[in-house]
Image 1 (tube, one colour):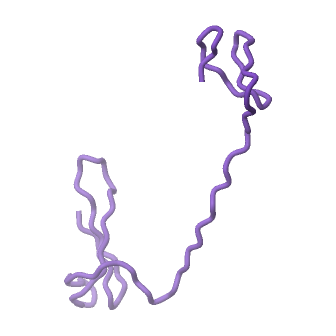
Image 2: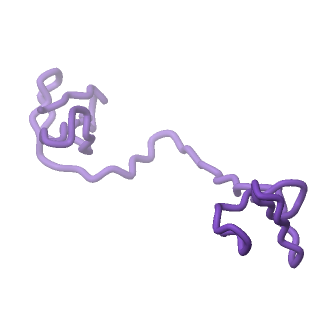
Amino acid sequence: MFCQKCGNLMMPRDGKMKCSCGYIQQEGKISDKKKKSEEIAVVEEKGVEILPKMKYDCKKCENTEAYFWTLQTRSADEPETRFFKCTKCSTVHREY
């Protein structure tokens, strides 16, 4: 919001918009209270995986199925890293 008197940027002070030139906006009141963010409940159940599965040869137990996900671990111009978690032994492998 800009001052109607001098055109400078107005700042909230004491519940009203005030300018450095002394102008105070009379209409309306500004609230300094921030909105409360809603809490998000996370339910974790052991043994339930929500990740997609694909064929992948585990190097530890030689299982042929794994969960997978991707993550950007390096700079944006580099390809993302793929992670694989064995469905049998839960060993995590990564592929660059």
